[in-house]
Amino acid sequence: KRRPNGKQCKTVIVLGSGSGHTAEMLHLIQGLDKHNYSPRLYLMSEGDCLSAEKVLQWEKDATDYTLHTLPRARRVGQCYWTVPWSVLRALFGSLPWVLLSRPELILCNGPGQCVPICMLAYLPRLAGLPFAQLFYVESFARVSSLSLTGKLLSPFVDRFLVQWPQL
Image (tube, rainbow, N blue to C red; front, side, top):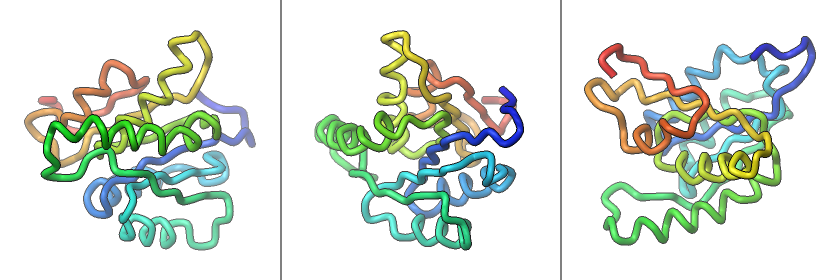
């Protein structure tokens, strides 16, 4: 949906673990007009110093953005029976940044951190309230199948984009 000239869009950008997902997301948002997509709130997992460094480089002279860390939804290699607890922790950690900041657009591209954020953003819709548009871009590395995050979020997001025709 096109916005009137000069109308800004409060945007949340979910970053991955500092390497692939973050690099892909920063590449994706290069085409965004920073003035129109403002303010920008970058959400990343705790301990993700690399993503923070990359955002600081990308945003250099900008003042209309915020970086915030959240509890990790799931760590690589984490025992599956502990995942629900870490997702709950991430859900509660995301609450003020998603529901109280009232973004108009949420961009995510695959890290597990997207799941609790998108769950929270979807809740107001269940009550018939308008809320953020959810855009999910499947990781470029997913060539033959969707990621678990993609499979979980595909029924709930407004736009689900894949980069390979076979997906």
